[in-house]
Length: 233
Image 1: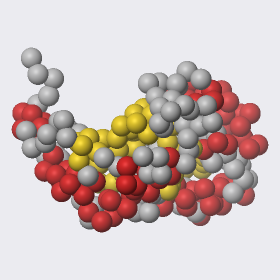
Image 2 (image 1 turned 30 degrees about the horizontal axis):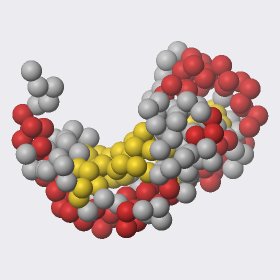
Image 3 (image 1 turned 180 degrees about the horizontal axis):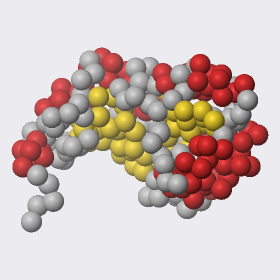
């Protein structure tokens, strides 16, 4: 019995599963593959040449998409005193200390990015088991532990996203929406590819970005030939 629905299977007939498409070719086809009734995200999937079991081969950091992801980013800031007002004035959806620590301990995770001032890290360390598996734990490496909370909030609201490899060494990034103009979606994808390439960890061996595909949230993916955008062919 098929794991996919009728719309997915119909969309898959539109692509050659063995072909590596140019980005321009893929962007012509992608809207036809996104057949859901909502504005589907367009996602970039990468197979990386890393061993995710080794600390010196982890890919984690931030990239900035010139046109954002099209998704409203909900930002929580763990802070005290004047930093709370600073965060809220900058556009944070939530900001505070004890009350939000207690909410998260109770299972609340209705936010997309968590930022913390350095003085809060000892207190929110207890939230690691909840936030860690969801990729929400503030970290200096991701720029989410900082005293410059206003700038951090504005950056994430404007299109800055945190990326990290999964347990199999792959990377998954939302790079826009079906409704995006083609030129804007292309700019986001090229920027994402080039910024990820610069994040190559010191321990990685051989080719870093090995395979790339593009897919709508609910549809099949296209294999991409993106060598023209990368320094490593």
